[in-house]
Length: 211
Image 1 (spheres, rainbow, N blue to C red):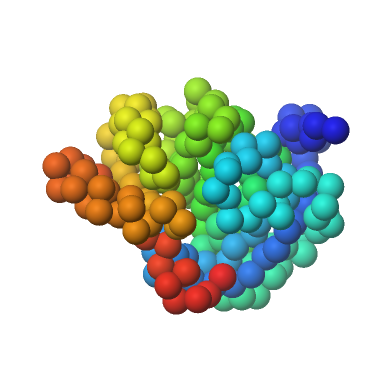
Image 2 (cartoon, rainbow, N blue to C red):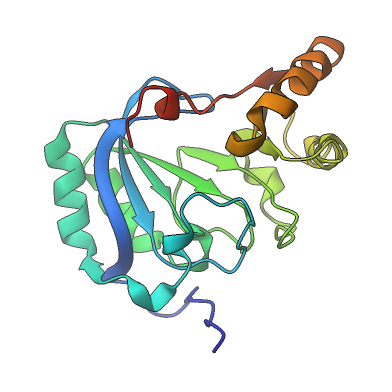
């Protein structure tokens, strides 16, 4: 049975399905190396073949947690940054969650494929479009960071397609898919040398063996 998209407009969520939440080090992209509290929401219809968190896909497999409890854990961690990820977090209404985090003085970051319109108030939007489900047309203009996973050489053209749609101040990153890193990283290095508006993102948390 297909999962229904959970974005709601009339009623704000008081709880959300959570696969896991934890305090760690941001391992990739612009905020690489910063301490951050991660909230990984359940549910995803994008379903990349190379996804490393396929357990997040089933919306109904993850117990719901109260937003008040999630915010308290994030605040108590001591982190100044809270990253909402998934799964695909944009399938949920995140207005209540982000408002509650902002009240506590925390920065709100999202990592999203942009498959659905974004809800909530964000300090940082990491937009990572996927070929498996086209992004909603409203999302590129909101991006602070464009991070494109390179799985095949044709993904460079995919990256440029969205680089033309994001704001001029947006940071551009190319990131090798983990299982293809040996093949794709040399191609990314050569590409960045020829197109220096791009930077390389690596999943350094995997090198450091941390979540």
